[in-house]
Figure 1 (cartoon, one colour):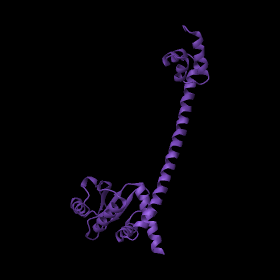
Figure 2: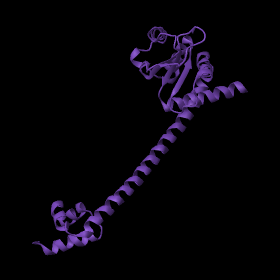
Figure 3: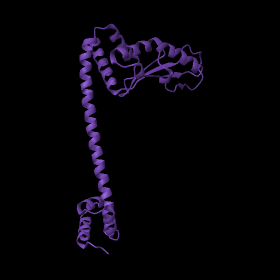
Figure 4: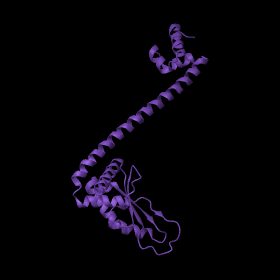
Length: 222
């Protein structure tokens, strides 16, 4: 038995117009449980619930799409600004022999396909030493930003190789990623301690380094 017939009819009317239980409770100044109790035997109410859930899902998807679009725009603007800053910095650094040597090394041994990570690979320990020092001096990173892993031939002892590389590049073992071991047996004895991979995970710094490299190539091509 409904005591407040007028409010009950108002609840039913609002529900038929597609209002949610929460909206009805707020509008009619009743509890959500009361609204639910009054509507539980109304067949159309369950259908309204389904429609509201579907509509909420669509609206949420649209909202997420707009948020993602806005974030992409913000990132793009940021990378444009990083590129402009890189051009200014290049003008300042281009007469520095060590800066130019670092770019030459990266041009020869860096992976430029990955857009979000700086990756430098070679068996030469001295090349890694130079590139890491370059990253410290010009990209402004600290030792904590550098990670490292080895691609090892099957005839090279992992523990021995890691010890030699760690001593050369002076990166803590805690920043070594899991190494990979090549399949197959080498036809000749391996004369190096694996291929070292220096990793710096930063899209902004990768954007800056790529722009420097483009300007470096342009300068050499004149």
